[in-house]
Length: 398
Ligand code: FES
Ligand SMILES: [Fe+2]
Image (cartoon, rainbow, N blue to C red; front, side, top):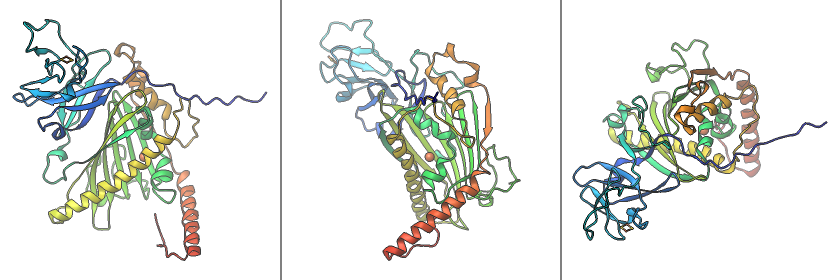
């Protein structure tokens, strides 16, 4: 009997993850106006208290008759509804109804726990309504506050997909060559994942693979980045379901290697759409004047953003598959999805296999010569096409 082929296309996500979600740079919200953010299937309003200076996030739909508070006005530390002027504070409590004799004692709306870190605003989302545990926090990045790093180069994108599709990327070793290297370079010479508690990490290197590089490859690199024995090194960690911090080191030229922090932060807009924030800071090269460093940081951020937008294009055009068919040279996707599931179940239902330490190197030693061969063929093919069209091509595009 012929074997049945079953591709399981995912159902819509009906629950939003528990975790910290970044809404963008704090400074965006500090202009004295309320801001509407479409997230978690509703509208939120972000507003800065006039005296407290705190950034508050509450549900934008007023419990009185549904007016949208993001269309209202900040009055003191409350937001005033544009419909009948009811006032709501950051804890979701009704603080005043100017035309009423008294405020109904149980007049409350949904409010969110917030925090600010790395000059970004975060909300805590938990379908069970619990506060964040003490060990679940956004990591502090020194570079975001340092004069020897650039300012955030930040962008916001709306994607017609769900969070899991973005997460899958952290184990996807082969796409670096086919998507980012465009089939002409960028194959990973080292690739390892570690999952534990609410962290999922990827260590990767692109370029020559010395068997003993002089440091532990699956640890934070603390050496001189000019001494890296590879072209490109990445240490990337999801801190919870929605905040990715990637520390990238790569050679820009023989004399200049750079260090970058890339943030990919996401929140669900609704069951089918996601917001993706992309931010970059670049450490200055102390041998260059300030203005050169600014241009260098912009060039690096533009280059890396283009790379992530290559992923975005794939995410938006692919389908979501619950039972992917994997080969021996793919990364640990099923283990990653098990890790990711912890954010979509009640805390009482988190199973040990979702949070226990798991580590796996995906060996690319078989793939590397194949990628080299494919790259050579593609480059030769492009050169032949260019010659036929009478266009001069550089010898190497990798
Ligand atoms: S709907 Fe907001 S005050 Fe009436
Ligand atoms: Fe990618």
